[in-house]
Length: 429
Image 1 (spheres, rainbow, N blue to C red):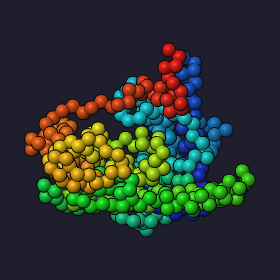
Image 2 (tube, rainbow, N blue to C red):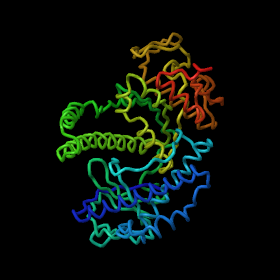
Image 3 (cartoon, one colour):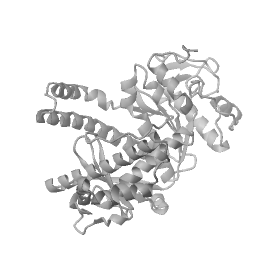
Image 4 (cartoon, one colour):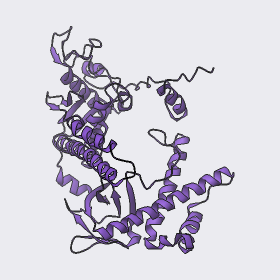
């Protein structure tokens, strides 16, 4: 399994200028590759291959009088920018054919020097290394100071230098994990030790044992500071240095919120994975919920980030990760007797089962049903209903329901955009 280890970089002023040149040269090569393919498409010609683009844009480009500054950076950086453009087109075509999972991917766009994130990548061919003093040596940049927060378990295969919107520099190393080392770090939990997690807004997570984890609401707590910084930015004249300083203050305020949310999700996911052998969560429609009046709270919660961390940590440390269907009636079914009591408004936080008269906390009951459905699904390899698993004592396989949205998939992307904009895609028919 490959992971990324990111560390903070502290380049000196001269090294910052060298990194800025490298960012600019990589951006120019990427944009030239995109333009070359756009021109070929407009002329009705086949797309030029990466080998042809490398010869024309890098080998000959570095000899051209107008592109002499390409010689000031490592050739590996330019080659990796060309590879990024090729991968972007591969993903675009795979999305058009329906071969790529996830949301549809658009055609690669031109990069701008005003983009919030600038990156360059060095592979082993660039001969970068970590010096004996603990500094990172990068070709044509020099030895950059690194703040090592943890040791690297193995020798990295590549390093990506990143500059974010707040002006911070990071070195992201790609490493391959060792299963034996991971097993020693997180010993296996008892087989019967599993957890069902119900995610929400009032409580970030509710576990099946009744544990409730309050939502930190990092964005809500920082709204006053963000509002003040944004107002100061809006008063500055465009193009002035003071506006640039104010923009950095806004970016740093947002960065603090993002870092705090990420740290919270890392700590909680690590604790859950360490203590349990099986982790079961619900597949939430985050994109749909983000289009409602609760959009800010949904984005502030960071459910997708938390679930992704649970998934890859379970895979890394040999745990079982199950994600049940979002249409399972976990809030309608009694976790004690399996009786389905019907839908309930959101303001109903406690209810009594009409069959066995058990008083349930809404979120705890949902977490227990999530755990039952997930463990049954992992046992039989298919989605199951909590009602069926609780009555029969074992999972009864069934097909997962189809999405309720009829406009689903890449071919209906235009129709979804029209519906989102308030238009009727069938008005013309």
